[in-house]
Each structure stands twice: as C-alpha cells, then as structure tokens.
Length: 419
Image (cartoon, rainbow, N blue to C red; front, side):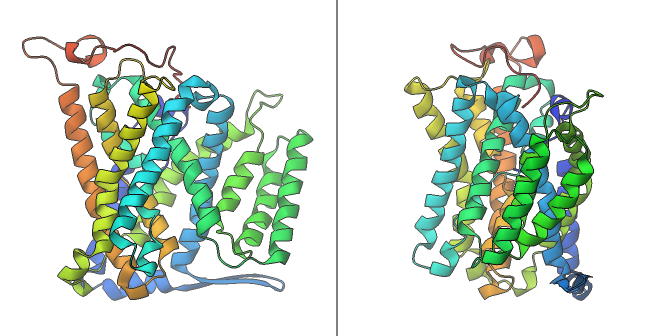
C-alpha cells in the first residue's frame, strides 16, 4: 500500500518513488546510528505549535508528520478508491471479485501468523495489523524493473488488490487504533462532513470550499480520538468526480496533484522520520524476538500465502477468474510483492506502539525491513523466472515467453485506465 499514480502514471509506472523511499530510510538509519543521532532525534522531537484563538495544537515534529502529512496521503488513497469503485477496475463487478478476495486473504493470514507468535504478549499482540498492509509504491516499483514482459492485466490486478488493501487498512485504523472518543469533537466532525456532502450535492466544483472544510474536519477528527488520517479519506469521498463546465474533474485533478506530492515529498518525509532504526540499543534476543519474527514472517510468508490461497479457492469455486494472460506462477510472484509492507507497515507500527514502549517501536521496524526485503527480492526473482524467454526462442508479443500463454479464463477487455 503506498502511492499509486493516476491512470496515465500507472500505464507508465516508474520505480523512482520506491528508490527515493529506500534512500530516505537508508539516510535515516545512517543518521540514527552515527554521531549525529542526537540531531536526528532532536529534529523528530522538535515541538511545533499552531494556535488560532483558543484553539492550540502542540505536537512534536514526528506526530505532525504522522498525523498531518499522512492525512494528505490518505486523501490520495480515498480519491483513488472512489475512482476505482465508480469508474475503474472495481466497478466491473466480476472483475473485482478476485482482487477483493485476495486482499482479504492478504489481511487475515498474516495477522493470524503474527498472533501465533505473539498471542501470549498482550502489548505485542496489538501490532497484529502491521504485516497485513502493502506499500504499493514499492511493489509497483519492483514490478516496473521487469519491464514490458509483465502483462498489463497483472499490473491492474496488483493495483486493484492494493486499493482493497487500502480500504481494509482504513477500517482497521477506525475500529482498532482509535483512542477514547470526544463527543464534542465528533459532533464538530459530523457537522464538517455534512457540510462537505451538501457542497457535493449542490454541485459545487471549486476545490477551495472543500479544502477549508477539510481543515476543520481534520482538526475535529484529530481531537476526537479517531485517527486524524481518516479525515483525509472522508474529504476525498465528498469531492466531485464528475466534470465541470470546462471538462475538468475536481477529484481527478486533485488526485494528479497529490500523486507527485505524495510520491516525492510526503512518503519520503514519512520514511525518513520513521525509518531511523537505532541498532546500537538492540540486542540479539530482541532482533530475533517473537515480535520481529511475527512481523517478518507475516510479511514474507503470511501475506503471499493469504493472497494466493484465497485466490485459489475463489477460482476453484468459480467465484472469480485469473487475470487475462496470467497463470498461477506469475500470480504467486505478485502475491510475494504484496509482502512489501515498508512505509505502510511502519505507519501501523507507529499506531500500535508508543515510541519507546518496551523498545517495540524499534524492534517492529527490524521485522518490517527484513520481511519487506525478502518479499521484494523473492517476488522479483520469481516473476523474472516466470516471464523468462523460452530456451532457443525469442520473446513473444509484449515480451511474454511461450511458457506464459494465457490460460482459460481471465480479465476480458482489461481496463487500461489502471483503476
């Protein structure tokens, strides 16, 4: 799960976003384990205050990044989900069945595997959702490295699965990672949401009114006990998807604008702020603790096992068909790529564990990096082998080898918009 560009971006994906994220995590770890570590942690702990009249928000820099910047990211998620449900891949009924079922499996199995390691530790068990999410920016980046040999239908499947993964992640945040609720702030949030709906129903196509009410909504949700990132999702669903008299869709315009901001600023800053694992304070028992193993195995084993097993059941029962031109081996490779949790898993770790709580915040990131790394390498190698040229024969059309000819069933008339 991570940023997923617009339609045109998806047809011509770039690995630059994933490379930038990896570079920022490497920089954060370098700083956290060097003589400059005090500057790195001082930056994240810098108090930042914003006050308007009697309203005052006072948070360390790390929480501003995790609460405010990620609200913008989840706005992008909401815009993409809305477009996919109303106009894209997930609006096509039967075509949406397989990614929906696969995404559910990709949530359930890694969570159960994590709990198998940590059920006896109530504090660690709160991190059950960490290995259940996918950083789609990295997953698509790895897929891009394989070039045009990978059929578009497989890319569309991965994107559709990621969108459902996002929806499930939003539900998990709302249901399991919220604090005691404030009735007054919930009422204010409800008022802001109702006002946004009225704007939508009245056909208001200018973005400014939505953004202003979105700020009110974010502050209200932030103080309500519900995680503030959900405000971004709610705002996104109220922005009109239809076109104005100039032929411009406010929703798609904002999606395109947020895509670059998310890819090249928001997620890299988040990765930098949350990726600084301090290895100097970690012992071997902590590195190989049930928490670390639960997260790592949940990502590199549980996630692909869940995606693949649920897909097999859905296809065998006739509930869904495989993407056009895709066999089980390539689908297994994509299932492995779904185990790249990275920034989204780090975000869920920040929700599950308070910074410094029994050092769980640091330990969890070890498991995330390990599991995500294995998933990335394993998925890439398996897909490269699946789409290798046949011995003694050149590539077939679109770079597919004769060994990867379409099997019976598939996504007919694949939606080239990518969702």
